[in-house]
Amino acid sequence: MAASDYEVLDERFARLPCMTANVHKLYENCHWAEGPAYFPAGRYLVWSDAPNNRMLRFDEASETVSVFRQPANNSNGNTVDRQGRLVTCEHGTRRVTRTEHDGTITVLADNFEGKRLNSPNDVVVKSDGSIWFTDPTYGIDSDYEGNKADSEIGASNVYRIDAQSGQISVVCDDFVQPNGLAFSPDESLLYVIDTGRTHGAHNPAHMRVFKVGDNGALTDGRVFADSTAGLFDGFRLDVDGRIWTSAADGVHVYDPDGTLIGKVLIPEVVANVCFGGPKRDRLFICATTSLYSVRLFVNGAKTF
Image (cartoon, rainbow, N blue to C red; front, side, top):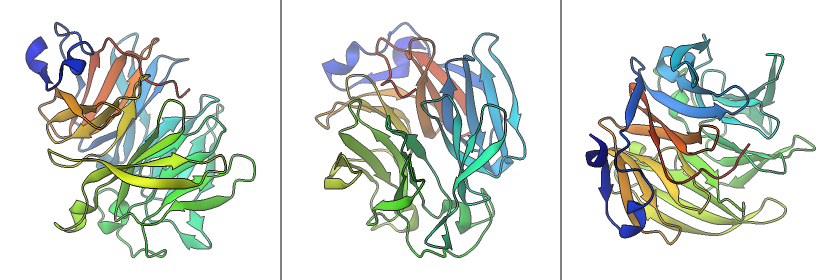
């Protein structure tokens, strides 16, 4: 494999992967692998297998996989906050939770203005401690990765949880199906994916970008990139602001100027990625049934 694992579309991509480093499959037998989150203190990765209602744990030192949590409330997106705690979007319970260091679970959000959330999908934590998450309907559309139900809110929004007050506010309400989201390294920009195409051929399949104000307000929203292969889903940024996003044929890499510069080719539809390893230079890739990883010459943006 090696060089055949990559597609160079622009010379700016050629120096990012080690062309002699293979993409490694670390685990298989998931139904839909999603939401990877890396814990540097323990050198392990947690990810979701929503249809199987479980979360799995990859130990980087021993390269072994074990069950982290089952049942897991059809968990989907995960992240690590600035205190090293797991933050999880749960489709089955329609909530966002935090797993404390002692293993207890704190509910961070399960409703907005008295109406139940749809099915929180992906989540990021800003350096000020605020928690931002998307709330499409995938977990209530059927019983496959949640529990079929009607939307009480009647919309799919992007939300922010204030770090001090815990107050939940809508930061963007014009998405069809908001999905993955991530901040630029300096947190001046927020990128959000809309996978509305799953609910109609006329709906968007793109990534948008917004300016982030000091008060959490999003302004100057625009389309950053349209998907060229299937749908974007989850994604992360490296230290130089490049976007490494999931797609149907692998991981697509975009320069901050919006140019698609290259791909990490994966033989399954990719759902999400995250950077890990002691130096944040290992890209973990959740792709349909499997967990993959590849070593890079670039480091992920620091988020923990």
